[in-house]
Image 1: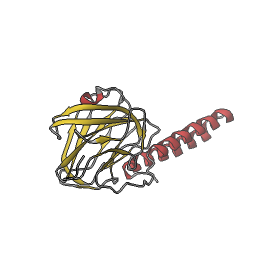
Image 2: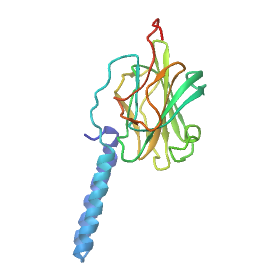
Image 3: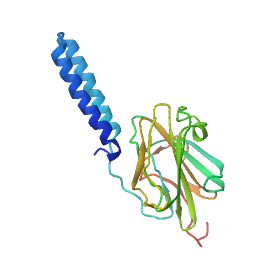
Length: 222
C-alpha cells in the first residue's frame, strides 16, 4: 500500500518513467544501452514506490504506553530540558530514518494535539545531534489526561519536505498516521521525566508497534 502523502510523487515518477523509457526505446539505437536506461528508470520508480510504502501495523492498546512514531534506528536516549511543551525535564528518544525505512509517521499516544508549530531551519544530516535544534522541524505536542509527549519531525540533509496536516485541537489516536518526512530524516520523542524508557541506542524501532516508554496511570505507584 502506498501512503496518501506520496500519491503526487509516485504519479509524477510513474509518468516520467513511462515517458523516459519510451523515449529511450525509440531514440537509442544501441540495444544494450537502451535496456540499461529503461532498467534504471524502472529502478527509480520501484525505489519511489518502496519509499512511500505504508504497511499496516499492530498497535499496542495500553494507554500508558508511548509508541514509536517512526521506523528506524534509535540514535539517542538522553535526559533533556524541554521548554517548548513539557516545560521541564524529560527523556528524549531520537530515531533516524534512512531512505530505506518506512517514512509514514504515527501518533505515539491517544490524546489531543495541544501544540503544533513549524520551524524553518537548516538541513544538517539527520543523525547529527545538532539537527534537533538547527534543522527545519515541526513540534507536535500531544496531551492526554494531564500527561504530555512532544514529537519533533526533523528534516535531514536529503529530506526537504515535512508533511504534517495537523492543527491544535485535532484528535490523536495512538498508532494512527499523521504525516511523513520525505527521503531520510529523524524523529525525536520527548517524554516526561520519570517515564520508563524501554529502548536503547542501536535498537530498531517500528512505527505504531515499538514501545518507546511507559509511565504509571494517574494515582498508580511508579
